[in-house]
Length: 301
Image (cartoon, rainbow, N blue to C red; front, side, top):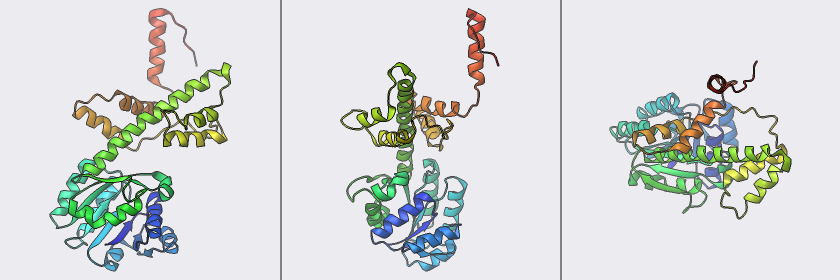
């Protein structure tokens, strides 16, 4: 099945490279002409627009959408609906809300089009290591793109799976990212406690390297932590401001909706919000209350 790729950001471009290395023919398009040119140098065919890409492709077509979630994805999929033929397939590999994916799948099905929501993890390392793919859709749709999924994954039988009907892929990826929030926060807090014990003059990079082998807390995130600590343990060129992609928020909301306690994931999300405050009004008020009831000292501006 011929594949088109819409969106050549870092992950889309790397996925294209991995597919080309696996012998697939890819037609690409992006708003940035330089990104298209770079992909064609790697062996892809270029298209100047989505319409141009669709016209170049033989049916049945499979089109992988790798654009930002929300409005860009909505607009892209809506445009594709009017251009594709029954039996064609659209894959959303971005971080869309699973509820939007369920709705979009139903919308495309009315036109006779297949839809697959592909929760995709691997980041900048996916080109070399392969991508973890959690895919939702019909068995027929997954069968059509199975060779593509097997090429993108770390191995044909590892790191990917058909997890359920439309929406299940992005739901699974959402929970994956929620767990990621909690793991990252635990590592961050643990290393800060180690750093605070100044009397031991601990080498944080050394400790990370020790834990990477044989320890029950070893993980890829710990590998990346060791990389970050190797050059500069003080992380002097990084500001302690942490963004969130939205999936952590959605995970917390889902926990509330399903009445499932998720204190670690919830608090890790709150910690990211705290990181964005130059000064916390809540912390100020806590200090003021301690001063009021116990006469505890406060630091003045």
